[in-house]
Image (tube, rainbow, N blue to C red):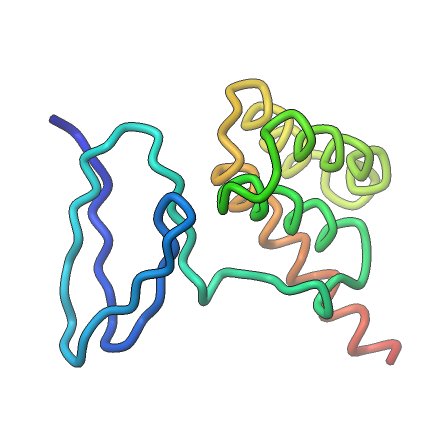
Length: 128
């Protein structure tokens, strides 16, 4: 059976199907065997205060879907609303996001949006 192997640092937090789990004092590995489990590393999480533009808003919507806070349909609608603006910045990343949305893989959408979020943050600091 295939699955997801998570290598966790000491005290690292991860949300699995809406449950927050914290690793103990040593490195460890978790094997998630349930297909389509919703897994979010908290170090990758954005918070409402972090939303500064369309990329972070799209990422946050995808993240909320992964965390089980939004339905996949609601999240996809919110993400798609940002894509026309993001397409002007990075059409390749937007194409990857659209492909991820077609298969309801919001974790993959998050990964595709990460570089856009980092760029958005860098621009905000530079103009800030």
